Length: 159
Image (cartoon, rainbow, N blue to C red; front, top):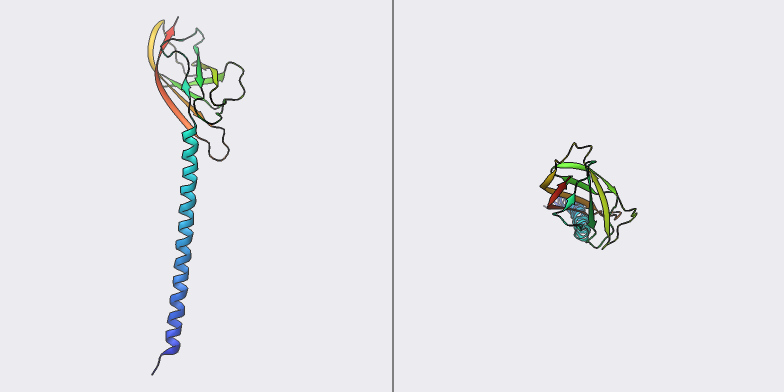
């Protein structure tokens, strides 16, 4: 006695299940590959995005209007968003504006910014104040915008 038809049915069912499992595994692998590719491109843009403080960190004049000027250099390999700079001074978020009329920020360029503490309530009495300054910049890349943050100890000189 042979069970030919039932063996054929079981073989067909096994092949269908194997094909479905293979399809799911290939789809999952493709999604993982895409995610790793995206992450690699994002990391590459982050590596190219850099900025640094270009003025003397121990002599930043704090003006009577609760503001100061800082110069930042694009020390990376990509264009930076000149209007997307964020600055924290002594833990307070500052209002940042371009002070020298620059409209783009190419690699190697130094741009003068005004940081204003009026909205944060940050003021300094006369004398020297050693505080931390953190700045965050972003690149202008369209698909994978890089980001970079640096922190430096600076001396604010208040009148």
